Length: 413
Length: 198
Image (tube, rainbow over all chains, first blue to last red; front, side, top):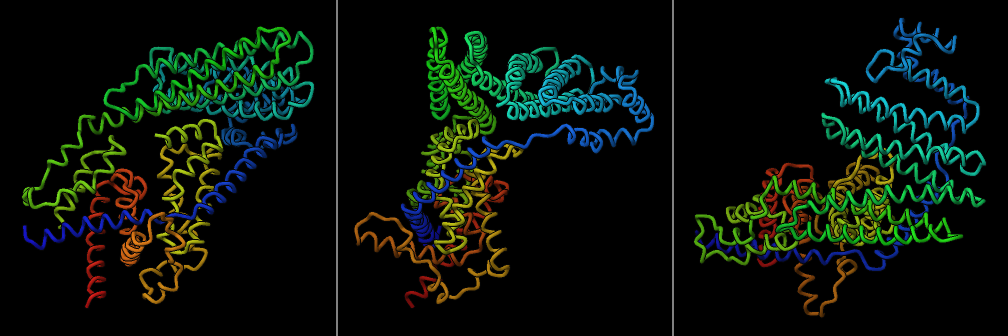
């Protein structure tokens, strides 16, 4: 080690110290505040207007014309045999092919026919509420398909489940839009009631797909299913809100209270699940996991308190049901946050466990000196300067690469 | 830890206030990152605001891919915004840093007094001023990717994996980049020193 190298080494430490000073470069406090205010106003406005003006409703004429320009229709016309069958089916309204196609699953030749005939069914429904009801049924059909595919021994099972769930989501999205459109009308109530009851069924079916059966679904499918669950759940909430807005007599109040009670039960089940998943997290040596799961448990406890308040409210005579519903939704939001934290923490925990064992202590790097530099000559301060902040702020990030930067620099010098 | 919590809240509930909190956490570093690319305070401010707005809009798009790492996403959006900015402005101007001479630099709005938000006493501040100025000048002379790497590693104190994530490079490539960047910065500083005291 030459004296030149030592000088250079000290210099690098100095450069790094100076570089740190660049943190002093900041936008002015006034700008930060005004820009934040502007940003928040703008995004709140956007969020609000999106909620107020959802996607425009489709007329049945548009629905019918969509059918004739749809991918399914064209793919049918390209297949002469099926196309002939479809023409027969379309003309006669019901034919052998159509009834045979009702059992078709994604990937089957007749599946396109099944979907096309369903579209005809929708297009022929004159009123929006009838169309909404059909879509609710169709969503159920898609889940039925999922169940049947899962029971099969098909090698492309996962791919087919994916298709069915995609279509399920399409149906549910349409139902959601229709609920929005019908919201103000009288007919909205009836549809909302059906949607509310059905979403519970959807939930059970979807959960069953992930957990039931001998074969496991792929990760991608599991993700799809959880997206589908979230969507169904959201739609259910929306239906419940519509029902709550329309309750006018004591009968409808009782009905609503029962529906909310059912919702409370599912939320409680969910809370239990999240709690179990949190309890199974390995928090040994992991301060970040500990802090996050504490945060999640805090949310969960909060959710339970709000939920019990809602229950109390429901029991009371002449209760403010809307308020109870708000509380139910609030607790749901808290549970979702807790759930995400649990999932995220588990994922990051597994990742770090796989990549780098938690035992990597920061001390290791301080004792580690490259062979060509006698430890008493090296300015250890500089070495520590490079890596210390990383160690302090993100213990899990201390990996081999970090240590190597320290060494790299020494070798450069 | 706090940012993780707000990020989850944002992702789950699309909560504008959680986004506001994340803005508070990241605004300084995103501003710095952009400022070192555009050199003008006003432009850096406009672009920073744009980055946050774009990010919010992305999060709210129904079919958008889920963001796993908000910080990396913000940095990537910042990079793209700067590229777009130069493309719109003048296709040749993005080479300005390498091409400008020192007089031009003086004219640039690099006046640090507007930027450094310091609460130190005047003497300390003077020292800090000259330190910051020296390194800043030297950084300006570096290649864009060197400057980026140095900024992320030594100013923002990020880990190699974080930097790799932001720059879209492999960890090994980032290590090499950093190694060369620091070498290059040292050379520039030595030359500058030589100029200052002949």
